[in-house]
Length: 129
Image (tube, rainbow, N blue to C red; front, top):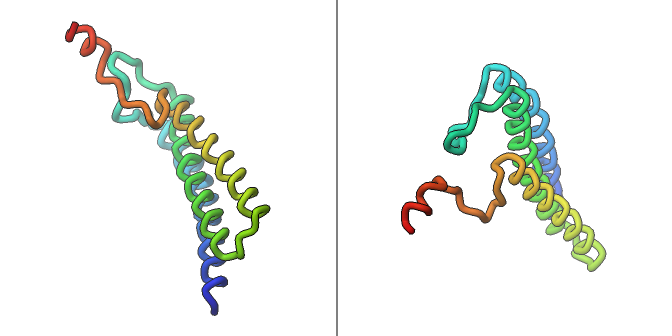
């Protein structure tokens, strides 16, 4: 067994793990949402999430983690083959699309972009002035 075969196998395993996380997350999210799962960090003064919103948030987190694993698999596999400009270009497009999806899901789940800090409350900034 040579190094290239090991790296390709690791890439396939990461692909499988990414898909498995999404499928298992979708299935596990159903009973969690039905039991009334609420995130620990709800914005101050917000109403509890409905079953639909709770499921959507849990499913989004599963998809987000699965996408991270799929991006990792693409990067691992790109190491196994001799890089060409065409292969690197295709990998860049795939990573770009998956990164955009990840950012979009993060915005849907948390209501803010990943680089934004969490608001501590609107009264904190007005009390300072």
